[in-house]
Image 1: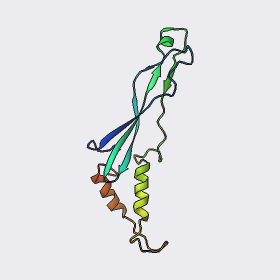
Image 2: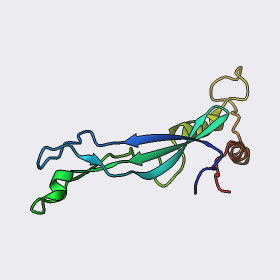
Image 3: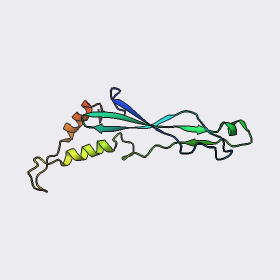
Image 4: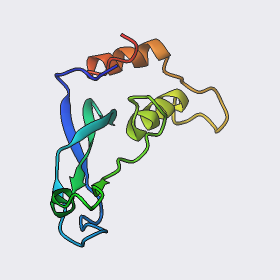
Length: 134
């Protein structure tokens, strides 16, 4: 599953904290990047695709020296709120908020609540560019 290509994209790059080779203490070089996951981020009336991109680094000095093992480091993206899901924290918060929103502010706590039906919520997200089951 992927988000609609028309949705705005926000890229979050994850580099290792230290890019100094632990073996020879030379500076390591960025050797590429990998999109490791995408998640949906809800901003009221807007959906944004957040791409988490990890960057691996290698030590060129150790790579040239055949007697040395290859030295690689990689930045790590944070774990998603729900494994194998596009839903980011802001999308989960919106779903929960819509499920427990009171009908009227005048209702006392614990009285009847207005729960936005899943079909209506799905339709709203699809209009914002989220595939959610399509």
